[in-house]
Image (cartoon, rainbow, N blue to C red; front, top):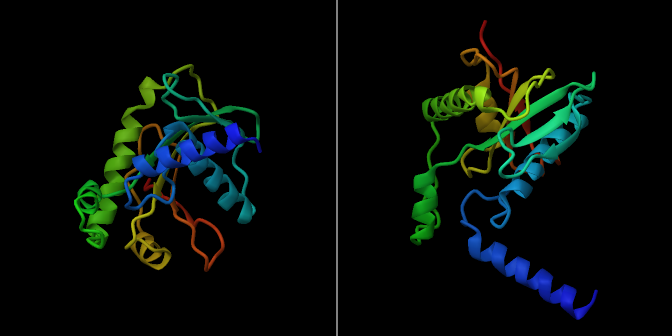
Length: 196
């Protein structure tokens, strides 16, 4: 690398560190939201493929101001798929961290967890009519990602066990992606089930 490239990399690293929120930011790219969304969808794709599933290919970020959707992909029949990305995180914990309360992690009981996911599903489902450049004949997918310290794989699995969310009007699939778990050597992935 040249000295100029080194300086640019160092500048980007400092910028990212200055923008980092410091709490639950495994997926965080403080300097580039589009890159963050691309990273989440990449992790989703890798986790699906590790389970022998491939529901879409050739995805790309749409970028500001071309969203929603955040990303677009092609399904196995070459139909366009709309992908929205959103985070399950407690904003109060982020503020506590920034004020110096580094270990004030949120206690996620099952009720808080389920109602928070229901809220995210409902909010994104309502955005369907706002999707730009329709149609998306391959479906409308939401990817909820989290790096909440108290939402580890076993906790999430116990909370989701047997639970079905109210069927959204427009969403065709919904996934919850948890930050990297060395026990399974990937980001644990859960397809959220809908009733009806």
